[in-house]
Structure formats: C-alpha cells, structure tokens
Image (cartoon, rainbow, N blue to C red; front, side, top):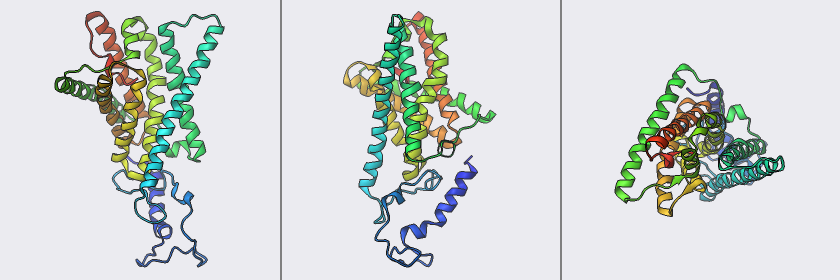
Length: 322
C-alpha cells in the first residue's frame, strides 16, 4: 500500500546512487569526482541529510545510513538518535510552557483549576500544543513537506477494520504482557496519574473522549510515529524504525507514572507493546491517520474500562498510553 510518489522517488534515488557514492555503473571507482571532472574532496555533510522520499521508502530495503567515507558511521547514527531524543525533550518543554501559560490564563480569568481541570490543560498543552508544534517545527527546519513525509488520508473500509482490530489486539497483548511480568517479578506496574484522576472522577470520561481522539492520539503519534519513526525509516528501514521509535515513546511516559522505579520500569515495558502495534500499522498502511486513530481508540477503551472499574474494582490505569 505504498504511496506511488514515494516509490517513484525511491527509484530516482536508486538511480543516482552511483554518483553519490563515487562508483560508476561499470563497478569502478571514479575517485569521487564531480561532473566537471574535478575532485570534490569528499561529499558535503548536507548530502547525507536526505528525506524519506530519497532513501528508505521500502521498509524492507535494508538500507542504512552511510557517511562520506562509505559504510556505516557510528557517529552519524549517534547524531540521528541524539537528535530525535532532543526532539522529544523539546516537545515536553514546549508542552510544559503551554501548560503554564494556559494555567495562568485560567487563574487570571478567575477559574479555580481543579485536578480534573489540570488533566484537560495537560492534554491541550502537551499533546495539543507541545508535540504538534515541535513536529511542525522539525518539518519546517529540515525542509520536509508534511504530506510526503507523513502521508495522511481518510481511512478506507479495510483500514477502519484494521484500526478496530489493532486497538483490540493491542489491549489483549498488553494484558498478557502485564500478567507475565507481574508474575515473574512479583511487582505491580506503576499507575498512570492521568488514569488515576479519571478513576477518581469517572464522570469526566464522556468529556474526555473527544480530547483523546483529537489531541492525545494524533498529537503523540505525529511526533513519535510521523516524525521520529519517519526519520529512523530513512536510515534503517521500517522494522528497525518501529523499534527505535517505540524505545523512545514508552520511556517518555515516565513523567506521568506514579510508583517505585521498578514499578515504572514494568509499566514502560508494558507500554512498549502498544507502541510497536502503532508503529507496525503505520508502516503497513503508510497512512498516519491509522495509528492516530488506533492510539485514540486504545486509550478510549481503557478510559471506558476505568469508568466501569471505578464502580466494580481496580486494575487498568497503569496500562494507559497517556
């Protein structure tokens, strides 16, 4: 289900591979010369800052980043991973600043900010403002076109069925993973503070669900799947990109976890599971709308479960990807 534009650009990139690497079509080294016959003295750094349309469009292509010297460059890999980690930090900083501004605005307006109000403010500030603005800023800074780098379209009927099935499947996998880890380690997972707030105030669930679908799912997926997984795909292909993005996504939730370090580690391990599902459906469909809705539906089901659990028992607040 690949985008034809991506496939076309991939073909063009493959066709120009010999010139960039300094190898001619007959297999001989041309010494890294330019078209005018002069030695270029090595490729410019910007030559390797390519977009998703140039390299790695095929998730199974196995293409890796190569530096000017040819072959894998560990410093280049470290730079890419470090840049994406930095992007996550910037996103949270912007989100916190947005929360402060929104909170001060409410206080100045004479609104008493309650615990439930803080939950909504946090959703708007981090997932609604911080994450999207950071993602947009990265695309502008790197001169990437949104639609080409993050393909987005209305889901087809098949994709809608995939959305529902993936959300339910992720819940099943998470339940199994949580059960196994708790049995092996004899430690309960750390709870999510947002989930606890909902459990203590279940009456807010109907008002919260639109925020989950419009801000929570799309906001987090735009940053972690659209930008971060997309950037890793350029260098390492789809499967590795899914894993790397998930290894950044799950630990990022530590800011909302309540419990001991060991309990937090268990929850982060559990949250890796739905993250892998979100990343996989994105690579499979090449449609950003799909993981955004899978994420939103996943959390909505959990919030609905918390509403029921608040009446009948405890047990699912730590599983929320929030």
